[in-house]
Amino acid sequence: MINGPETSSPALLPMGFVDLLPAEAEAEARGLAEVMDVFSCHGYERVRPPLLEFEGSLLSGAGEALAEQSFRLLDPSSHRMMALRPDMTTQIARIAAVRMQDCPRPLRLSYAGDCVVIGTLGREGQRQISQAGIELIGPDKAEADAEVIALGAEALARLGIANVSFDLSMPVMVWSLIDDSFSGIERESIIHALDRRDAAAVREHGGPWAELLLGMMEAVGPASIALKKLETLNFPAMLRPHVARLKEDVAAILARLPDARLTVDPVDFRGWRYHTGVCVTVFAMHSREELGRGGRYLAGDEPACGLTLNPQAFLRVAEKPKRRKRCLVPPAMAQKDLSSLHEAGYATIASLGESGEMEQEAHHLRCSHIWRDGKPAILAR
Image 1: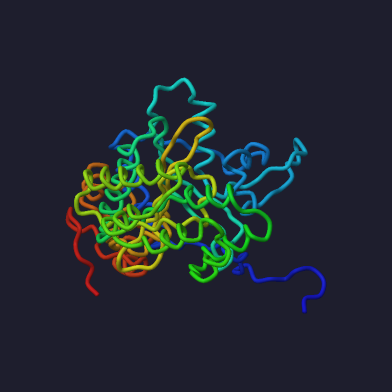
Image 2 (image 1 turned 135 degrees about the vertical axis):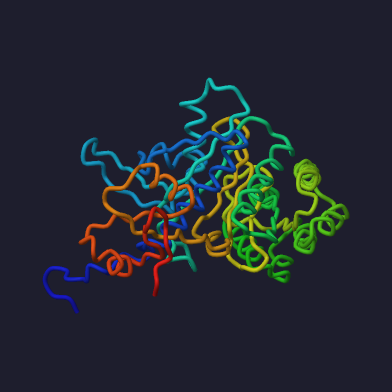
């Protein structure tokens, strides 16, 4: 029991917040730089929205789906409620609709930054998360969906992440059935049944759509197999365009990425509330952790498709970057020599000790090399 003022250790941080020490912070910065360079090379221009916005704008429209994940606080200046962004996608949509409304479409934007979320069940420790992503705003075409996914694959490949799987879903199909035909307790029951993949409960609570939902539950797996199973189902008219678009998306993705691992899950719908078309979750085959997710949605009144990668996840499966060799150099050194060392991949550490103690200082500062006779020399251990 704590009596009086809180006396917690300065090393104690709130749950879900961590310090990144030099090796981790360096790896994250370099990894993000590689990813953002891939996006930039394909014409995606970087924007930087603010960490805080008034909750009336941040959590309106598509942002309503994020309200339960958002930390709020009172602005001492305006006395209005503000919210910390739990996701950057809706902010990009706002920028496109308001600040860049006169820019020609399609609009290609990229972003990277931190978000703060209220931890969800099973993910209570994930409160500060970093994001890096792209949004393609304007065309509502399968080729646009394929472009976004292909760039995600290229960015991960740049980091040495191979054997990536793209899991496709069309959550608007499930939500359309639920919103159109269920309410009250029945609605909660069918959502719970589908979320648990409980066939008996789906049959019990699915009403007129029970057989269709059970068929959709069976149409899960590699894209070619899942699509064939979907073709055998009797979809209502309101869902047929979504089924057709899913087929188009698979074909367009394979045209860009012939060797892509694509799976389809038509009843993956939780966490996709504001999306209007195909959605994708990205995994590495040798990891169960989600590397990214995205999908089609409305940016204001415009169709858009985006993909958000999770640096904290993909850096755990990426190739470990080689640490720079550290070379201790004299405090007064010609700029051309410093530049040549930097170009060769060295980090230069300026000596602040006595000239006769440089070797000892180099050991103390974890240097691998020391500047000697006009060149870097390996430090004897």
